[in-house]
Image 1 (cartoon, rainbow, N blue to C red):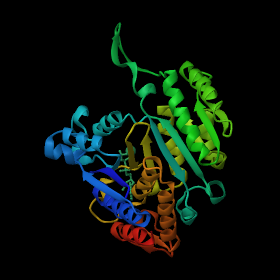
Image 2: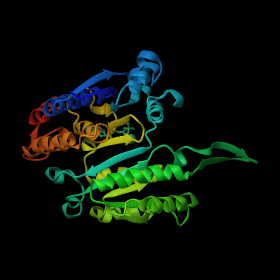
Image 3: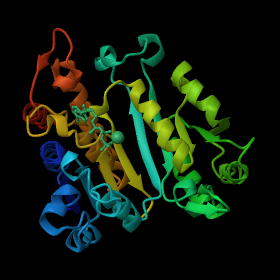
Image 4: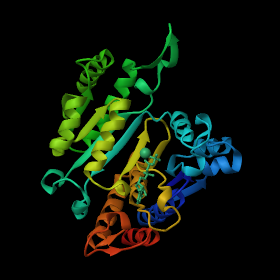
Length: 356
Ligand code: ATP
Ligand code: MG
């Protein structure tokens, strides 16, 4: 029997509650497809600070490095907000991504027909939206040197540097084209090549990589236009590939097209071990109340099956189960609408697992 090792890092706030539901669903999938998942739990974020003084302790690193994939809940909360920058819970995420060399962040923004009422946008514009944002995660302006606040003559100057090496663009472009091959066969590369030289290189390298993916359509868009087009007519997009900062911003915009933070998963891949987590934070305002929506985390586990375990049929089974439960009218509080049945975090987790 096939076996997979998953490091589970529940974290803070609603993290433990939603991760628990994802595990139920993963177990159901393992039973259905006849494989075994071994889970090893680690501390991260505020929970780790409380126990060890460190948001990303050595022990957790070891658990992660022994695994095939990492399932993360969320980190942070008001309790740790006043700590010094270097020991904040959020630092653990940067450490984790770096450790995993996860340079490609995949964020799907897909609107479930069943939730069309939850979107604040016109149904005609958002119905059927299914975008995959592929964001470069390990380089660009968030990492380029020099960075910092310096003294220049008699005043201070704040500096960040946008830089991309050819190999960094090449590898993210490959991920985007590979993903597009399995979807709508279209990639939009977003840059600012009319102003930023680093993205002139970006565009050239994406063109070069495209030569090996002639079955995938490629177009280029300036980031300002892309922001507008995402709001104007989002259905024109399939895969969007872009730099770290543009991806940070555009993926949030895409996410909100679907109107439901609690539904959207993410995968950070590229290294040997993939990282899977919901796009939302630890939601301290609703933690411990059994009302959080676990579907983003359940869908993140779904992505794990496709991208780490090469079992897209398992992700499809999860997707079908989620849709079936929504179609029957079950909703957590955040996506509740008239005529539906409100259920708890635990209940919706059980329903989805049973459906599988
Ligand atoms: P972070 O800084 O970690 O990104 P944040 O401050 O941006 O976090 P979230 O923790 O994502 O914010 O929460 C934003 C709002 O969305 C909160 O009101 C929270 O309760 C709600 N929310 C987030 N995730 C969920 C979820 N899974 N189910 C229900 N509500 C959620
Ligand atoms: Mg936030």
